[in-house]
Length: 600
Image (cartoon, rainbow, N blue to C red; front, side):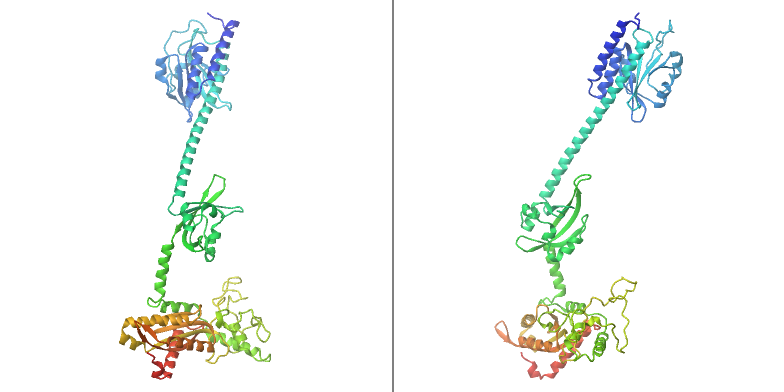
């Protein structure tokens, strides 16, 4: 029987302990480390049975490794004991420094708890330190932070005795080293899992990037990635082949531009109002040949990394064909199908856009009040006063003496907007309407302009005598002799005559004027910025342009034209303006003999 106090025993135990601890550090996986722990106890520390109960994430302990008895290993490996039962065991019996020994005289109460155990019956000890089969010796293992990692359980010392001081210290030292080895094995396992997960994520990212690249490059519609933020905000970083083909520019050239460089000048506001995330817009982009193509833009923001730069992904769809159809439909709805001129509805729309509900008389009497206020300062100049209040400046050759409202200086040396107060027809000061310049709106100061501010009021000349007033002339044209042509030669000839008349009328007016067909043989011309004499001269020129013969299918036919000149004025409706011009046309038609009217 060996005596533990003998030096050679201690030396042999140290050699064995050193060897098994060295083997702990050679194990790679957590399972290998746990099995090495229990094998080292059986081989190096002199116990026949050993197992490791490892703490699970839920706190309970599972038998993770067993050594010494294959039958017992098969029976209890993988079974679980509750944390409460183990805490009870670690507080019972005798404390041997870092170990816990429960003699068989106390351990019988543990036979019915849920901790997996393997034991055999045996006789009572023959001497004081003899090992009994129901004795229990546990070596708890703790992490560096004091957290319980698991418990080593040993049984059946080969010398048949309870371990002495040196044996206890050796088991305690071994449990400490085993805890380090298990912690390191767990750390390695976590690192390996993290590396595997990272590799999978990288593979998935590479696959996703490749999928995105292929979807981006080979998309049938245009795609672009633009920079967000910084000095290069909006610059195109990447474009696909479809966008390059659409704009007729190579990708290397497009990288010098942003969409704001390519957009049509009239659409720049639409582009700037389009939000980055989920924004949609329809606008025109410039091609290499100088033409523009209608496209639909759809934006989305793509983050490069968690805190990295963000990019703008824009999908560009060619909608040129759809826009062409839309414009054709809109043109058909607003234009005459035979002559291509604006139809009655479009004429009324354009005319109504120039008119407001403020009566002309209010504005006219205000001018008269100003004229009275200027008496004594010299002769009244018509272009100065009426131009400041009524004429619409800048309308081509016929604008004549129109001046910019509120900005010009009249012939008297006064600024019209400098007069302190406007007057109504009684000569009394007029209280400005809420919202007028310098006057609070209906909601108080700063609420905005009233209903007539920022509107250039349309004013008609006072009479057919040219007093210098410029206005919106409405020339109502009715063809003379057209019905007889229709009756004699058929509708085909009549249609050809209408088409030619429309062409001659369009050729005889300025670019900004409107020539519309009301229906039948009736046409209307809107010419802005004309005086009474200008309108009369225009009517004569147009009548003379219509009179020359029109050749249809080798046959020459002639029509005449009667013109009535009306004037658009705020306070009138479009129908009232047209009715006034129509009435003047009939007056003019009746004033000429039938022989002079008929030209066909």
